[in-house]
Image (cartoon, rainbow, N blue to C red; front, side):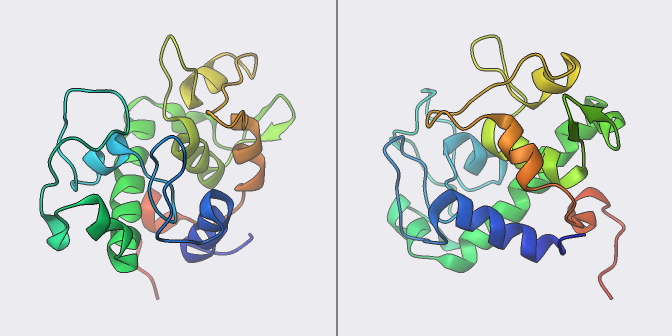
Length: 177
């Protein structure tokens, strides 16, 4: 194991933004973990605004006192809370679709792990007809490899973020000792 969930988050935050909380990329993703509208909706911080872009024209929920993009960018602790909430929601989707059955398998030379799957979901989500994601990669046996706006392939995240112990996210009954 490379470490626990904390180390996973540090590695993910470094890969996404070099660990910077106050950054916005050219696609409108925010903060250390480069969260978009959809991920912040899942985490309970943002309301749907009727667009599929990260244009931030909608409303914030006020959770944890966050009422604007600026509030979010200026609150490291809230970003840490938000990523945890988002990852819990992501893991529920992965489990509900039965994608966890791929854990331990090797697909296209890549060992599938919980942490690799969560990172791949973070990068591309489950996927859809236009934009392939985690589900597409797994169910196609590795033949469908989606990429993000920066052309980062899902396979990079599956490999780079494999073998972290993220049981505090994947096992709701896990108790940290």
